[in-house]
Image 1: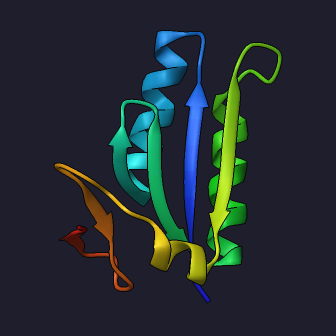
Image 2 (image 1 turned 45 degrees about the vertical axis):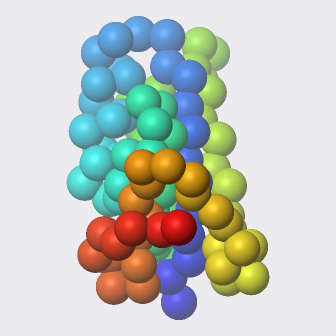
Length: 95
């Protein structure tokens, strides 16, 4: 079953930062400059994690992955201009 994850990163080098952003844009929605929402199942999360680890330098960079349980996701609020992923991966406004 697919779950929602928030991926946040702090990448030292511009080239690695750009490559990671491009990767994450293919998997989810950019919330802020270095924060993405992705909805993936366990197998896809493993694939995504492997691809991220191939890009980053673990001695200089940081990537945080936070899983949002269904209850937490239902209680998430976005104020102002915001988007989120729905269950089938299409974008919808959240208020």
